[in-house]
Length: 523
Image (cartoon, rainbow, N blue to C red):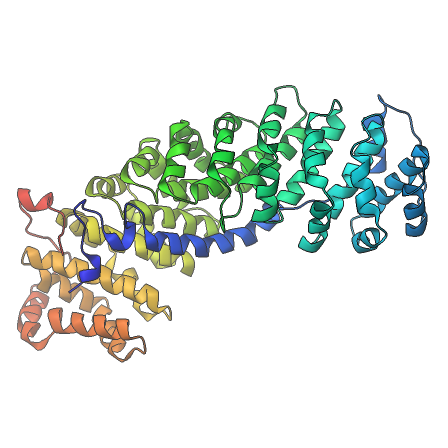
């Protein structure tokens, strides 16, 4: 019936974890990533302008140099001032430029670029004798790099990256922090800019800046920049260049600041969104228990990336999945199936679907942890996207579970909400449900109980829905529904089905023996 669902010699379905990875999980993970990126814009911007007020700036610089607020100049006056030979005039012009770019609405980035200010500000980055001018120039470049990709590329093309990386070694904490911010904006522009920064050995210098005595704001900027250096997967960053950050991320997960935790989790979610060797490197840091523990966080900006990272890890091999289970991941994922945010419920169901795509023992752990009732509740009452992931979790369980597992699943009341999804417009979900029902019927057939199960499916309206699918425009749906009708609901079975109906069967009770309980299905 279902050659595409055959197990390989390792007992894991190729359709779900080909070579110990789920190709379908990857595809669905990519779909979810798009939605996560949309949600992430509210939680963590990939580029940020520095909107610090003039009063804050002067206060922070009071120990270095007492300067009164600088009056605004026109853009032409700024250009003339920056190109002058007098450093005080240059400082006044650069500071005024920074103020223009720091305003919240419509900063004149293009006007500043067209005035030729970018190359002059990059020159000022070398002014080690004038720290204030270095700082102001770095701030101007930070805000220009916060703009469009074209605007960021102008900063890169004029040679800012190596000079900004060099400023990470500055004696001034203010200059170092502004350089970190500028590099974070540039790294957020995409893979090319990210790798260009990494090739200039920025990561090791950034890691060296993380010390117990640095300010919270500085720490946040460093970790945010590190997360941008780990971000993007087309292509992903060279793993050997970002791997040294893993022990630091492990320590940062003990940090009390929510922003630091959030960006650390985002970085880990980017790293684990890849091959098993990357997941293994994360696992070997001992980071998994801390990451799993964050699944109980009440802070959404932390919970979302932590859940994504854990979900990525369980797309790995059995040992990597077991690490999440051993750390108490199932208990937390079960609680998240009841979360108030639909996106969190969907992510939790997706993670569980990858665990139920695992081996028999992992499926047993899912059932033992009490995850079946909340999964069924999601099937019945959840947001549609969460229902879709819960359906995958159920079908994966029917593919790799024991006969006893399926008996427990059916007794828990899965059939009605599961069959209701046969009326969705998403043919991919329909196929998932048809496969799950077919698995259940085959399991019942192995122990002589499929007539009872067929009646139960008919009783909840499933048969009517399957019959309607024989006219579906999708060929796979049409063929699968036809095959199910022919195999399990044909006229030759009508008498037996009616007999079951007369007996008033309410629950399926497989006549399992001690041997069949532990057998996995081999379709």
